[in-house]
Length: 345
Image 1 (cartoon, rainbow, N blue to C red):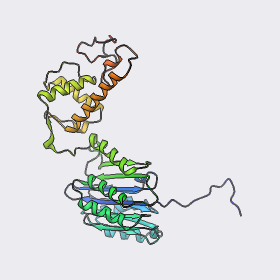
Image 2: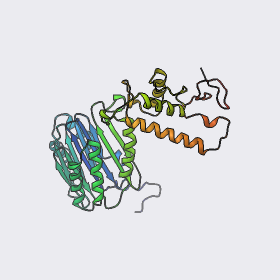
Image 3: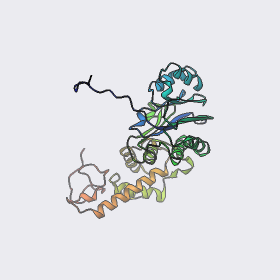
Image 4: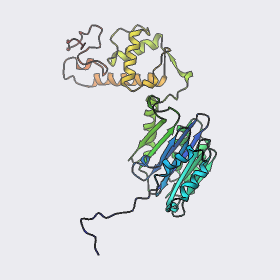
């Protein structure tokens, strides 16, 4: 009997080739997952984590309940191995599943069902588990593991290095589409309101791992504090004068460069930080992060190029930076250029 044209044809859920790594940094008390797949928005399915509890990657014919259910078991004190056994034992489709877990102490475990599409397998080590399916071969997973073990730095650097190493060995044999990086730490999220310290995704891109790295660099610049405090720059002398010049060019500072880190300059700089999402990089000790200084200089150079390479449409239109208030002038008198209106109260 033919199906009615008015009845939806139900197709089985997509199985997607994926490689991922779950890991725990004991020194920094962080848990993370990095993943790449020939599947749209893999970050919405595979990575799960909770600070102080552990991390889970669920994939292949993914059972998304492995994420929250696995974290709930880990929160009760179950080890990674016990959690994997509990999740798969009660799953009638476990032979089509793949999962990797690290627990609160860094214990690791993984499971690859016998019906996962070839090549499929996993490797566990101290504080990490690597797993993948529909891969070019076992070297993909072993390359992930070796890169994670040998890469210096913190969890973001090591997890991203693991993804790159896996892709160099062929990765998902169907190609690339999406990638994600999730790292949790206690009160690590925005304004300390969650434990999602890093949560960045690339949902659809021809080179998702490289794009993920690019997005992470921007996220790191504004949202994180991973720079060495020894590199902090003291705001005085030429540095203060440079800040005043660039802030003035961008419309945040209206005085003359004095090389003084006074209240007016600090207020202009605080406004710049807030409008460019650098609240996390604000300091009260008279120093500035090198990354913020470099970003400010880049924006000032771009503003100079805009003014010199753009034909003016309105009188005075090119004399204001993006930080200037509507109707205000970057000059100290507020009467410069073609716009002579007073600034708003």
